[in-house]
Length: 194
Image (cartoon, rainbow, N blue to C red; front, side):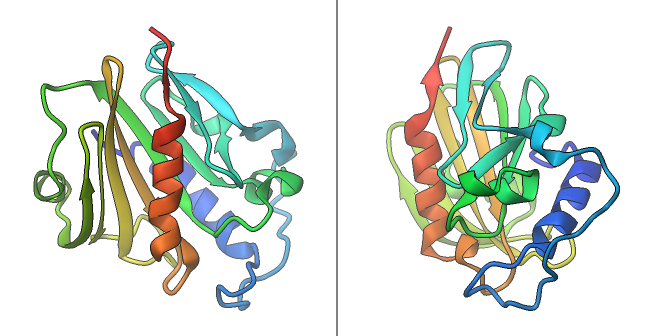
């Protein structure tokens, strides 16, 4: 499962995210940025059908799905205001959340197996259940300004396995305990449609 299939979209979104100011997360970010792109209001979704309709992905509170990033097996989410829906992003932490889907295997990979597959190190805070695994690890940040420390998750939903990665700025709420709560909320909202 490659959670960084859309590197161009991730880099562009990371710059947009880091241009947004979030209280308690550094305040050094610039307020509002006009990139000359089409109105972002048209790109924010609260849910999407994934894996050819096998799964309904519901964005966590304050996050929206970037419609431009959507593929049958990949979605990128960020704080709604970064995607043009400011009223939907109340108090969400700055972060980039990706979800990727593949056919489910017999077992959910352990934190160490996932870390080895993605070249991650310093695996901490693992929580393992019958349906999902979440943990924090260090690895290469997908864009400048994002911390190497981030959250990872894997969950089985119906016939699909979902891989998650949540990145945020250093010292930000997304890489703290709140990050796991975001992953847990997303995992608990998953619905198998097929």
